[in-house]
Image (cartoon, rainbow, N blue to C red; front, side):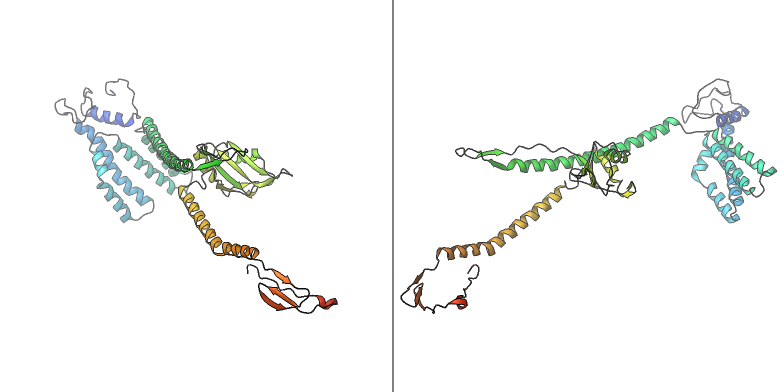
Length: 389
């Protein structure tokens, strides 16, 4: 269409295609053949494909000496420059694209030319604003112009890729939320089953009424996303604390713990969010400074701090062990002592005192009565019974 002078819209700048069209005109191409499909016959319509392929080939060959000169002028050795040029000669991608009628080969050549001019310009920094300083600066601009006027990235494709990346991240986040939700639902289901199995005996105030066996009414716990904030300034306000966490997500509620008498903050609070992502972002505020104080941000029970099923099982096992130890201590030490003390109370000794004689009968045994003393000597030592004996 360039050869025929027809206007058309293209996603790329026109320079490279116009140069290829120029090569076709020089080879006798009339512009009637379209290149829409790969593998079409070039011989029958007499397409000068050799001449048109010659331009990308020359551009690909042009890259080799440019790379050698760039490495050499950058201050490296001749061997290093030779190795770079040799590797580019046998680079399969460059060889392939240089054989075809594509825009990539002239684009790479223009880029290499721009880099070479820039290296030459840098070498003239010791002699600024002189003739060659201006020449290499201008040639760098020419190289940039040639590069950007040949091919550019299609914005729609870039947007599609960014949207696909965002979709992938959203799918990953959604997958994590689904897994967390499933785990929480399983835990809530296990708790509700245990609660359903438990019966609570409710006794009424009336003496004649019998105990009623009713199932404990319960509500399915809702998910709450709460963080505990400590080491706060004593003069902090709810608005200031809410503003501190705004970048993580607007808090649903802020409960600042205050003293009942002075109404001043005790230095800690509870902040609730409406979604788990905001709560996770809020945890990153741990050890951040608020009014020159380093605060602590941690999970709470409501925010998932102790809701794991494993933690509840461990607590139940510890409670069982403690109850078992208490039962053994009660059976071994406390119960026998109680039984002995009750027996001593029931089988109390009966003393029969005979005022006319000096004998005392205690449980059938006859003891000699000691003489009565007067004054300070009348104080009698009393035998103290050991506890439990």
